[in-house]
Amino acid sequence: MKNPLKTIRETKPLIHHITNGVTIYDCANMTRAFGALPVMAHAPEECADMTGISSALVLNIGTLTSEIIDSMIISAVAANKKKIPVILDAVGVGATKFRDDMAEKILNSVHIDIIKGNYSEIAKLAGENAETKGVEATSIDADPEKVAKELAKSKSSIVVMTGKEDIISDGKKTYIVKNGHEQMGSIVGTGCMAASVIGLFASVNSNYFDASKDALCYFGVAGELAAAKSNGPGSFKVNLYDEVFNLSDEKVENMMNVEEK
Image 1 (cartoon, rainbow, N blue to C red):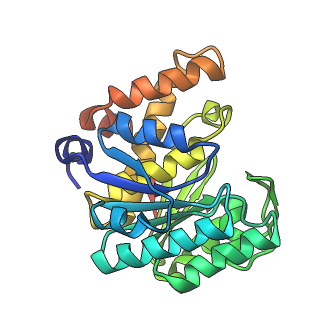
Image 2 (cartoon, rainbow, N blue to C red):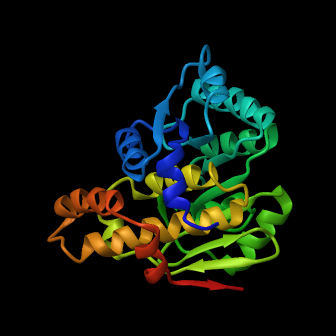
Image 3 (tube, helix red, strand yellow):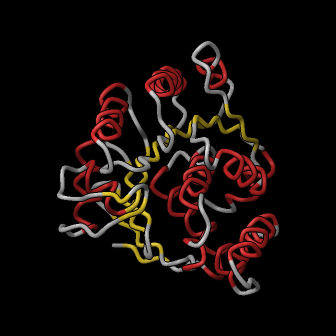
């Protein structure tokens, strides 16, 4: 898609989040910095209605409860009916049986257009031998590109594996996104923010494979630019918001670092 950031800023899509309590504020701010509009409606009494006026739905199981999972499914049913993208950030899958079961419940109840997680979270969803340390990735025994491809095929979804290099697969083709900086791992919440960014790019581009690639490139470029002027995690977080706010399609186009397989 040509000039996705310009499109986002012109159309200001509403992105409905049912997300975790640790990073909800950061996800809202990051969505706003890109030029979209965030809303966080978790109550089952209104979540479907809020999804009905939104352009994408982002689900994040970082601080899950049974009640929140119910709201996620209610909202995703509404999103599927409206045919807007549903993004699931499988935070912490592999850490506890409850978390694993709830992720599977969502995946078995509704269609998820984009499944996002770190290497071990995605590997666990794919049935591979993987463990998650809290919400942090550990090593996996399988080839990550193959894992992403097979999960994408089995779920008819786009799969996004985030890490030092981000892997995106539609089951046939794969993007390797090499943008980003290690300082992005020095603050809590960049993974959650990335899911929000994927949601807002998917809201303006129905090719979710390309939208996911663009989202991680734009976010990664902002991370590189922020790191170049930061002295530590505090200044990096401030600079990350500023660099996102000051991004342009032309700037990112010149800095994109993507391999297609």
